[in-house]
Amino acid sequence: MTLEPANTDLPWYFSGVAYCLSNNVSLAQIETITTWPGSGGTVEKTPTELAYVPGQEPKWGAGASGSHYSKGANSYPEVYGRFKLFLDPSIIRDVYGESDDAARIPLPVSKTAMQLCSDYLKQVYEHTMGILKRQMPDTLASTPIEFIFTVPAIWSHKAQEATRTAASRAGFGSNGRPIDSMSMISEPEAAAIYTLTSLYEDKKVREQADLKSTEMQPGEHFIICDAGGGTVDLITYQIQEVFPDLKIRESVVGGGGKCGSTYIDDAFHTLLRKRIGPSFDDATIWTARKKGKSSQLMQKFEICKRNFGETGDDTFYLELPFPINDEENRITDGELHISHDDMKSMFDPVVNSIIKLVESQAQKVKTEDGVNQVDGKLTTVILVGGFGCSPYLYRKLEDWAMKHDPPLAVINPPKSWSAIVRGAVLQALHPAVRTRKLRCHYGFKLTTEFDPEYHDKKNARLCHWSGNWVIDDNVKWTANLADDCSEEKDFSFNVFFDITCKSNLRSGYELRLLGCRHHDAPREASSEKVFGLGRVPLDFSDVVLKNLPKKKVDGKLHYQNNCVVKMKVGSADASFSVWIGNKCYGSSRIAYND
Image (cartoon, rainbow, N blue to C red; front, side, top):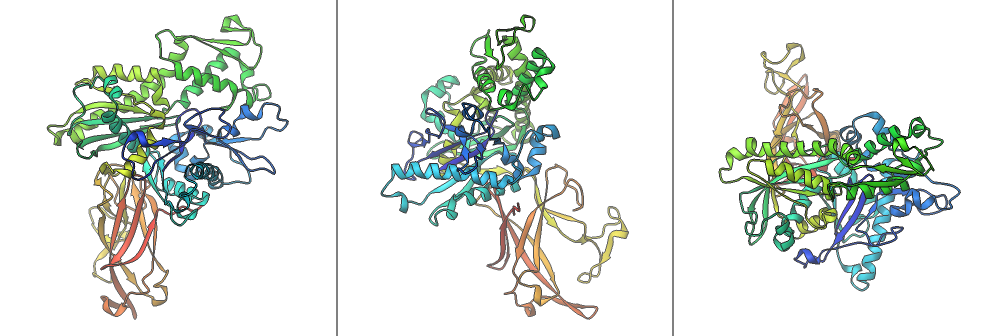
């Protein structure tokens, strides 16, 4: 079972659930939950929103929308969304950048972001288990469930682990039932698996991409463009095998940017401000219920966004919440006229940014990977995600692709809104991605010999083990940005710990892990380019000190405890362990502390 707990799809975030039995083998056997409280119909996702009503269980999903409560409600509760971004402050900075954007994401005074995420996911968990209980009344209690959460590819390990923590507190995995488990996968990777599988199972997809007789072959590269609400994620893969099993590898390090459909909503507000005037910024008139993300106005504009691009001369008429008449600004009897050119001016800056990101990935294939793959070539761009369903984005991307040398096919697979959750199920049943690219450098703080050409002598000290001058502010990078990795392969590197006190063997030692996203990683641990990934607590109480190398310094014995660190990086998580021989003395994921 897969869950997309907070995917950046449209103006607000949506959550979806797909599932199937583990003995199912085809795409057609994957089901999605299509009944959500308050939705009023059959839909594959529900808004990732939460509202607290005194004396009641939290309202969530479509049931928490502003329009729902505006009908006859005397007290209008605050509707909270996008709260997952606060699980890692760097996400707000990386995704939104400007402080005024971050300020638009309110949190309750009495609740943390982790509590909101857990409260929301608890509702999703109970709803999901209720549906499964009705479908499997006699066998659910004894049927193990693997829950697979999808997260954006740009997320840090801290944000990944925070998602795992929130889900666990909500009841997912073994925290809910001992027989259940939980794992993670990146959203573009899941989308790639779904699309390639559908490409070979669904004739209509091949026809859409004009691939009736030339299906994608081993050696070919393709770009996954996951266009959501706040961000766009891109990853490029190469097909290694098609039959009997699909196998792909990540070709180059993925990319992304802050150019999702939310920025079209911002442009729409700018248009309204220009047409209506200063009163649009008067919060006593144009309240959040009138123009906020859950307002009826923005829901109607969402329909315009989804339909724009179907024809070459789209014109829309939008009912405003006030009876405004201003013919000069094309507002008649409270109805706003939005021309094709108006929509184009709102869409083009965002769409052009997405095309530049795709173009950058295409260039990377040629410069970083293409030189080593004589027979490989980029042939296809696959467009998924909520904004990926936009006809206008598809047409503009297709125009660019046709001018590329050689021309590229653009595929927008059916059910692309649920492509990610469906693909995560497929990856769990039949793992297809064999190797990935590391998105940062991994290392640890390590003392190194003093180098007079590089180091300042005032920062050096004399090492009692070697007798040489050494520098403590140093990073040993053991796995590098763009290195290939797989879940079957561990990165291993040697370290040693200077043990001076027997009483601290159980809890007095830890391994500090460091990271860097810059291509040229600095050697100094104190560099602003270096960030902490986490710490691995170690228990050396079973180590026999008398068997270790030792040296007396100033009357005190020092023992040299040599260890091997093993690092495993998955699609959307990382784990670390410290070994002496065949015994593990400590293991950890990236810690999250709220």
